[in-house]
Image 1 (cartoon, rainbow, N blue to C red):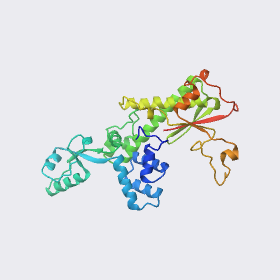
Image 2 (cartoon, rainbow, N blue to C red):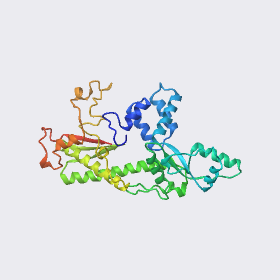
Image 3 (cartoon, one colour):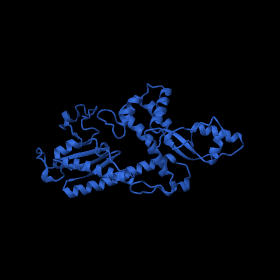
Image 4 (tube, rainbow, N blue to C red):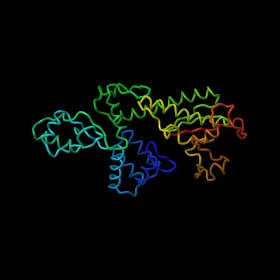
Length: 340
């Protein structure tokens, strides 16, 4: 779903979440990103109730649990030698039979509770029953295992540009505390790495091919550039090439040998003359009742995928190979926007 899904036919992660939870796609994005940043079932339940007030609290809890189990998965615990000895003497042990965990030396959370109860009844401390925790059975289990591995490493660093976490949050300082904050740091700081690589690559391509434009602003998963109108399609192609190179760098550093085409390019690059969420929005409001097009003569923008951009640029960044564009005001500027 993460690799093959498409926003256009509502098979991407956010659309599927929205359909299953009976909320809008924008609300689903909030829940999905919150989960990646470390939020749990209680936060998801609260958001679902906020987004769809017609759902009962029990329905929200059920949907949140189902959503977390299908995406993040179920947490299992690896048994130590002491734990194995203890589990061998208890027939009702809650052992987790899951190939994703690697062997039958793993127990579920319920199984661990039973073992601790057995250990307590035997008068043993049982502090060393397990040593490693993993997520299994979800579409994002591997991702969360990787995030926790980085967060629990002696000196957590982002996997691409090796940026270090504050020493105040290193495991030697906080132990297993602040795990959500540390996982959040891995995600957010990796996103910063992605932005930095994109900015450097775009500056290089602009200078190399004489594209007149500059970085304007980045908002969450969007990056926006101000570009001279005649260079708008070349800037859009530069954004697509930048994403390809940046994705390739991330894949290489994470020891992935392949880069699926579905994530190699932006689903669309927005080309517009104003700052708005979608190029088709007319932005009618009580203070702007006629909208942008009728009230101010501002037409809709363009949202182009990689194939459309290649067609408009003759598959080239060179200004000499570009088709002739309709004449525009010489000082007119276009806004090229890309979102992942």
